Length: 350
Image (cartoon, rainbow, N blue to C red; front, side, top):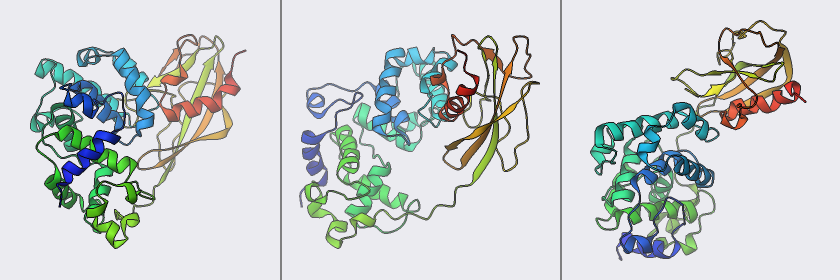
């Protein structure tokens, strides 16, 4: 049997996806190495987010902060605003913490080894392996959702995730080559993303088709098996959208810890089964005949929207009024943008 890694790298040399943060196999063979900062930034953004969604965000961040030193010096609010819409906002907070740690503790140079990468804020085993392999060609094994699917099918493994992760890691490690580890890491993820897809895998054009146990058994489409998820609960909340007669909007910065930490948003209640009303100032609040709905990782959220027009002397208990000329709805996280889109027609100034 031919070496599996060699088979996959041969395929990758022809079919590698083109991405703005990637150094392709031809350039890599010519000695061009990736920017570790760009690789790390892409891997953080790609966590639970599609490549299509990340491309423009990655370009925007690299344009605003082209080096890790630039990012480390950036204002928190600016980074959070640039991240708005990408979701999972703890990633943005950890992005800043990690950049500042690299500058403070490593002279602005990314560590090359897996163990040291793991000491950085927000970097877990997968991200450490991906950065070490892709940026530095270290023979580290990546195991994301794509690779889990490829390995479970290659070996026809029916033990359900997440319990089967250690076994899948061992299988993946056994194939990871010592040479061209960075190209191989990207190749196996490309294979899962473009050929060994969740539905209707294109087994006929797969470079590993001849050695794939699930293809032979006819079980590829049903793998990987997963432990059934618990039903996602629904939480309720109240969002208060106030606008002054001069056009300014009342917003607040959410606490650093918790969902949407450090992001701008509308003042509101707690998110629970029975939220307690918590208006940020005395006003004639009107309930909007619409509900903002959003799904987070572990729960659905339904926000009742209360709107009010207030005069310029209004003094809120919390939050601050932001002038209409500096307020940008695009800087809001997605759920808060949904609230704005629903409330804006009621509070729009002509």
